[in-house]
Amino acid sequence: MAVPKKKTSKSRRDQRRSHLALKPTNYVKCKNCGSDRLPHHICKSCGHYNMRQVFSKPAGEEVSDSADAQ
Image 1 (cartoon, rainbow, N blue to C red):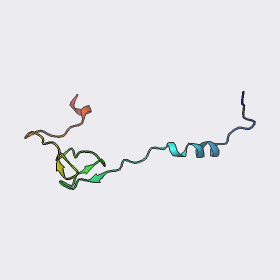
Image 2: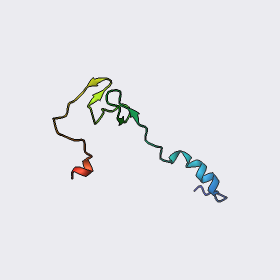
Image 3: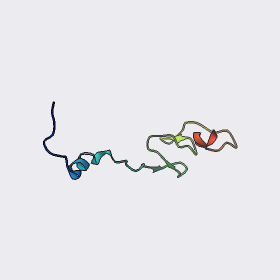
Image 4: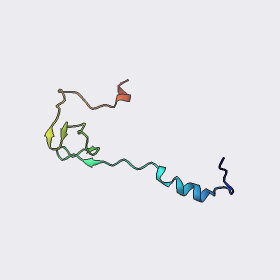
């Protein structure tokens, strides 16, 4: 069984884990309405993707998260 001869230092351990940190969420502006949206996703406020109308919301409906709806 492989057993290390020396204790791994905190510095070496943390260098190995450096890529595990969370990265900030990247947002881009919607070209149609100007609101923030995730890249390669449909805009939640206007329903456009790649300068095309993908879906339209019924009148009076607001965007809400699934956690808020419950």
